[in-house]
Image (cartoon, rainbow, N blue to C red):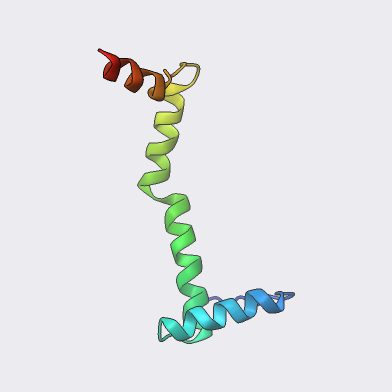
Length: 76
């Protein structure tokens, strides 16, 4: 397995991760690994692909004003 060293963390960030690890009953190393894994899954997962697909499909379309549509519907 590969190892990763992270330098120059601010004190606030370090303490926040330390608190997160304690709350989740993990070591600092486990907590950081979990955070990295989560970010990688979000970046490469199907949700991002679906978002890109919809963004491409909807590109250039003008969407109506939902608030105006609801008010007009209520006024009928």
